[in-house]
Picture 1 (cartoon, rainbow, N blue to C red):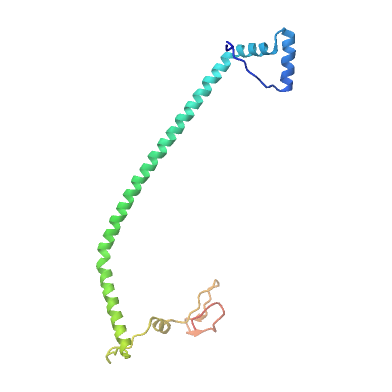
Picture 2: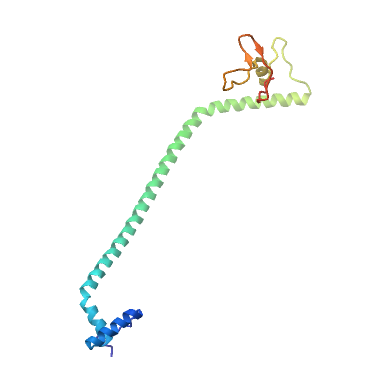
Length: 180
């Protein structure tokens, strides 16, 4: 038959066990009854402590649930916002395509014509002939080098390598000036 009062095995530090032995010898009670009386006297404190800990656990559980709900709502909101942004970007790209489509189509036609002309000239072995009235076109590099004045970059003293008033040039330096 089970006992009315449950038994409990407790492990104590040696100093606490010595104090308990001295107390029980002074009171004439056993050590277990002395511990039982002390715990019964402190029962209101234990009850209050249990209530506070249960409330803390409940609040922690509710906070975790609320955090989970908030994170889920934020994720849903982010997905909706992302979808709207993608939709607006799609509309912008569609508008861009409609505005630039004709230009790109015209450019592609020009490229095709240029390729056909180059292929025909390469197959016949002859260069495409210019009319005598059309001037010789310069390449970009030729046009740049003919029109470029030889002026070294300004230094921090305010002196340039070309005296612009007299039109005289100073000898080039090793400062990286490759305009010769």
